Length: 282
Image (cartoon, rainbow, N blue to C red):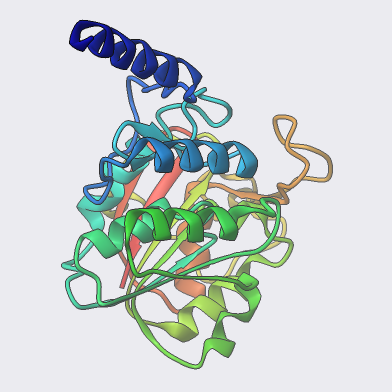
């Protein structure tokens, strides 16, 4: 009887494991220290919810061995791992600080700021990813991280009525019809540091200090107007690489000049590739 009971137990366990949703562990992805082992019942519930809320723009570990975008759907299984590694080097000490993540998507950067010890983190999103805030709230609840996520336009952040020590403004500029309006709104609530990222037109990678500033007074017929290093902003009338939500693409000097014109001081610039830049602003 004991042998039969043991065999029955093993058979039942194997049957349960076969009916559970399969965990597909990506080779690369963003780990969160708060990701915990969960019961089989919770595992089923979490994976089912991930499926209901997809597509996820960020791929990260929401529970031990459970990922938000394990299939590697666009933008890919490694996103935002490479970007986070760069952003982390630009961040000041976030312990006890107030942080605002504008266009937070499914919340990875907001959650990571909280793990690093931020006192208060607010993630905002509204736009092309309609379930982004619901994804982020579900992730925060699953991970046990106290992060505030709200639906609010980047143009309206000044209505929050408070200042933030650290502001993230990434992956947003080129999706906005009025990008300088949004940057000025961000400046109004940023008291210390902003991390800014945008795609750019092609450029040779150079340090911020090596880039020259444009003349203060340009003549319309001046050769400088067609100089690739003069700040410029390209308007996208149709789609950009098949994406119809893109409106403006600056050159690298244009990105720097626009940030200065909105009241930011440029402290460090990282050219992630020849069509992308991340800037720490003071």
